[in-house]
Length: 278
Image (cartoon, rainbow, N blue to C red; front, top):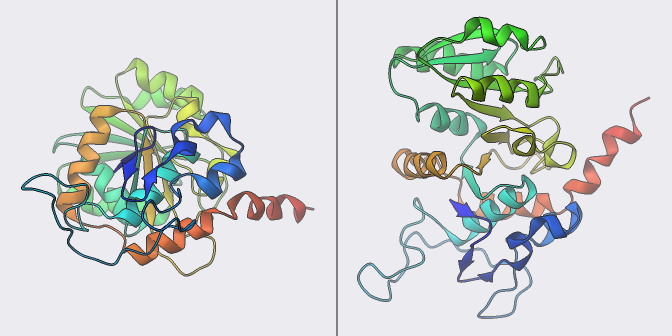
């Protein structure tokens, strides 16, 4: 996990990520989490393949074991957090691993409200895996946000939405859903895969956590399978961080390196769908 406003690692301090609102999207995408290497001056952070890291003294370390954290992963997580206007960023080995980790923050007996045409992999996890662990889901048409109030229960804990949905491209009003959900004390998760932070930053609209299949637009080159998440909620970030390490569904350093390279052209690539929308 990388908090974007406090990142200091062996590759230096991320000045751009510390103040994301002062920079344009392209500048953030290129520079956040990619400070010059403090040891060599390399402008692209080196690929760090080591599984373990030497401690300065017992318990005195920046990195210890690459499942827990790795320089390339923390660089990428810093960039994701900056682009989503978040305090914390997380990277996982797939979008499905991201979904599983977020939903594992819920206790058995919890109830989830999901948009009814949610991505098939998410529907499968909610309907089969989460259900087997005692988490029930109601799939609801949230294009009409008034439907949300009708299905909130005493044990409801989380609302999961995509907008646009994959693949039907239906829209959900993030701000309206967040307002209703927060009145009931619920967390809101938004899958932002199809718009990316270039077009939409759900945390600014009231969502509690944003997730992506980074395999799609964020990486953009069909050579990495990955998921990411970002949040400003300290307590939620702590839970996700623990599960990220405990479950261990984390991306390799090389995949993180590749995905961060992909981010550098995100602002250019997101213009292509607009140019070809006739």
